[in-house]
Image (cartoon, rainbow, N blue to C red; front, side, top):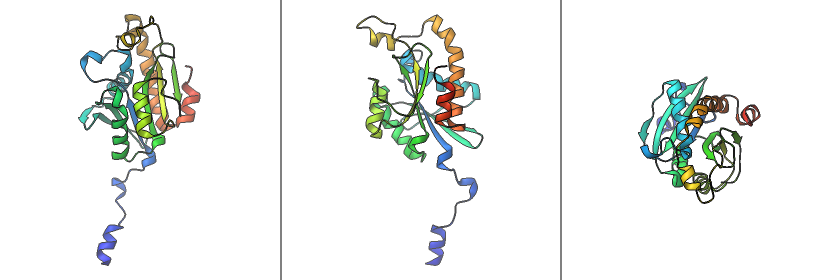
Amino acid sequence: MWSFLSKLFKKKPQSDYQDPMKKYLIVGLGNIGAEYANTRHNIGFKILDHFANKESITFETQKLGDVASYKLKGRTFIFLKPSTYMNLSGKAIVYWLTKENIPLENLLVITDDLNLSFGSIRVKTKGSDGGHNGLKDTQAKLNTTNYNRFRFGISDAFNKGQQVDYVLGEWTDEENEKLKERLDKSVEIIKSFGLAGINITMNTFNRK
């Protein structure tokens, strides 16, 4: 009996242990498929792809999404691009939070926002879904509005009744040119979230 109990309570080797508070789930919202790749609604995917290209990390198709892992100064970042389509984003988020044993406060959801001018950035710790289907499902699955989100402005430069076409439309040449700097800034935000925390990140990057 003692032998069994000693095995049960034996401390895991330090090399196998990962402090949950040093693990982060970074979720870029978007829709799968080549036809959506360069659309405004897929800015979450685009930001994570840009990060992966800069840091030479590779996504692998796993359950409910494409996943990549990145380590920086003792922190582990799990990047997730859900394969559930936008309307069921929350399902993938809950699954990977649970699988990786990541606390809710270490979740950051990246999404497009019609209410912000193009390229504007807002990092927040809570808020409504603002009519965004990806956030709506995330809120429902998490059963809370208190989770970190990184809102990337796509503006509302569309005529009445054209919202869906605009959101699912591709970036203009002018927007694509300006995106380069904004994507680099987004990489800085993600790193800051893990290294400095949400409050410093908000104070440093909001309105920039």
